[in-house]
Length: 182
Image 1 (cartoon, rainbow, N blue to C red):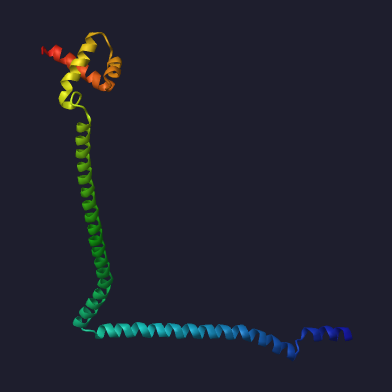
Image 2 (image 1 turned 90 degrees about the vertical axis):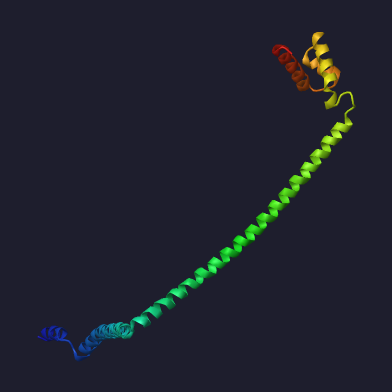
């Protein structure tokens, strides 16, 4: 019987156990209530803000709305205007740079033309009178005579101290002159 009483007492919770159990269930319940309260407060604030905005917009006259929209548009144009000014300044700078480079290039071309003319004058003055471009008739006769003697273009060029291409050109012109009847 004593064993039965022990078993029976173990099944019946004591007051301390019930209190501990109720405290452990109380904490989650309080957290749930607190979360719900925060959610309700947040939703209430959002609804108040939305209704305030609607009241403000309803209270605005059409002129106020137009003024507000113009102000917003002007504010959005300012960064665009700044960018346009910067792009314009950049294009002016690039144009100046390109103009300076073009002027420098023209100067270099002019200097090259002057040097080329000087070089031509030096070449003309360095050649003896008998072998210059104006006296090419004499070279033509010498090439023709040697070709008639049976020399080839390489031998003629070596003996006359001129290029093979020049000798071949003279010979080709001579042949075309004979063919055309000259």
